[in-house]
Amino acid sequence: MKNTHDFKPLEGKYVNLREVEISDAAFILQLRTNPKKCRFLHKTENNLDKQIEYLKRYKTLDNEWYFIIEDKQHQPLGTSRIYNVSGKQYTGGSWLMKEGSLPEETLEGALLARHMAFEKLGFEKDCFDVRKENKKVVRFHKMTGAKIVAEDDIDYFFEITRDAYNQHKQLFWDAL
Amino acid sequence: MTINEFLNEMVDVLQTEEDLNMDTVLSSLAEWDSLSIMATMAFLEKNFNVKTTMKDFREMKTIGDIASKAGL
Image 1 (cartoon, rainbow over the protein chains, first blue to last red):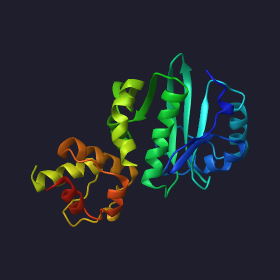
Image 2: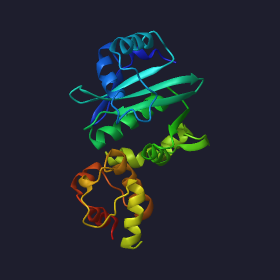
Image 3: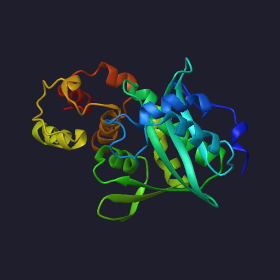
Image 4: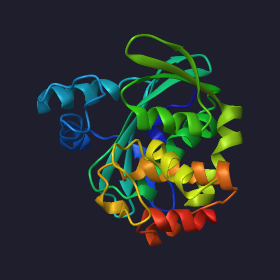
C-alpha cells in the first residue's frame, strides 16, 4: 500500500479530492458539530485542539486515509475517510458535505472517494454501516451497488465490491 | 405507469410526507437535495429507461417537469 500522504489530488469536473491537512481542523469541526449534519455520525467533541491532535495523529498513520472534498477554488466542501483496513478490505465513512454544496459537487465527491479506494489504492471491498434512520443515504448506497449483509436494531451493514461499484458507477458519472 | 402511480412513487423516492402534485415546486420540498436528485435519476433510469444529467435537474422546477422527462 502506498504512502498516502504523498498522493496527488484527484481532480474532477466540479471538485477535487485531496489529503486532509492540519489547517482543515476548523472546517472539519464545524462540519461534524453541525446538528443537522452530524445526526447520524459518531459524536465529535466541539474542541478545536482535540481536532488538531486527531489530525496530527492521523498524519502519522499509513493505514488510514482522510480526504477533503474541495471545490475548484480549493474551498473545502466535505470529507470522506478510509479506515479499518484489513488486506483488500476497508471501511469508508465520514462522508459529509457542507450546507449549500451543489448536487454535482456531492455526487462527484462521493464518486471520487470510491474511485480513490478501488482504482488508486487497490481495495476490493468496502464494508460499512449506515443508520437505518438515514434513509436517503441507505438508498444512495443501494443505488450505487452496495448490498445489505446484516442489520441490528439501529444500523444496516453494507458491503460493496469493486466489481459492483464498476457495474453501477456509469449512470452517475454520466450524469455529471 | 399512470400519473397517480408516478406521484406515489415520487413520494417514496423523495422520502417525503408531502402530498405531491404535478405543480409541486421542487425547491419548496425540504427533502429536495442532492441525494433526492440521485434517487430520482435512478428511478427514471430504472422505470422509464431515461438517463438524466445534473444539467437536466437544474432545468426541472416541478414534479410535473420530472414526469415530462419520464415521458408521462
